[in-house]
Amino acid sequence: MAPKSSLTLFVFLSLLAVVIPILAVTGKPFPPVGWQPIENPNSSIEVVRAATFAVAEHNRLAQTQLVFKTVEEAEWQHIGGNRFRLVISAMDGAAAAAPPKNHTAIVWEILDIHLTLHLLSFQ
Image (cartoon, rainbow, N blue to C red; front, side, top):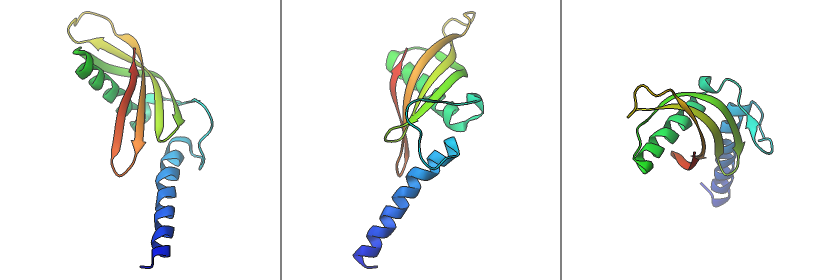
């Protein structure tokens, strides 16, 4: 394949790698600006995956035993991947009788050759 053809193919595939995930989340080919609400966050595989990752990563870093319950609220924005701002309901596994508490987390989902998640904050 000629170098120009390889470059064209690379650019085309790179655009698809950006546009397809945006279409999956928003139904639109270009991302909106700012944080956008996500309706029915518990029915979104991406949101639940980000929320369960946030709880597991927080448990690993803070040596806690939180147990994920649900996603109460979710917003997303596209900046070098997808960022999810989540309100997560979780129970303290060490205190079984304790009611669930809400925690706010921001997770960055990088869409590359492999899906990579990074916990940016957890409160």
